[in-house]
Length: 211
Image 1 (spheres, one colour):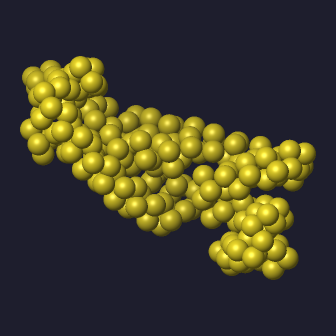
Image 2 (tube, rainbow, N blue to C red):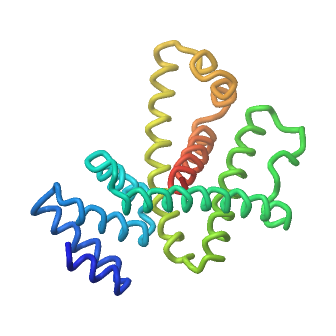
């Protein structure tokens, strides 16, 4: 735990995380080690895990002032990232870097329009995220993160495709289960469905990663 603190002061956050993990492996109830791990995770942008550590500390020690301060800072950081993400996406549209999906022609079917909108929104969000973090000097880190999110999105989309196929095989109308979105998905072909669900899953994962 003391080694983790020393590494935090030296801004060697990966080593600090490793040291805190080792301390917790020996004593899982070590509050100081967990707090230092949370601090290291924040610096490494593992915000969900950092929050989990801080929540654990505050359950055990509700009056732990350093943990409360760090939690307030973390919440502010997460909100700032979410706001920055929205601004970056909006700025990309205004600058003409991404097309606003609402500007598409009305010649397409409703289902294809919905697919087109979903895919463009996902691309717009990806571009906005990368531009935002490029401006913060951590583009490489987030390019890697976005790659991981795309892999997770592919897995989720494949899982959803199977669920939809099972629902239809059982005689259920997708519109009954999913409303207007289900009606749009039902009108798409297999590859188009996968593209739609992949985009939807990606947006969900990105928003979750950004708080």
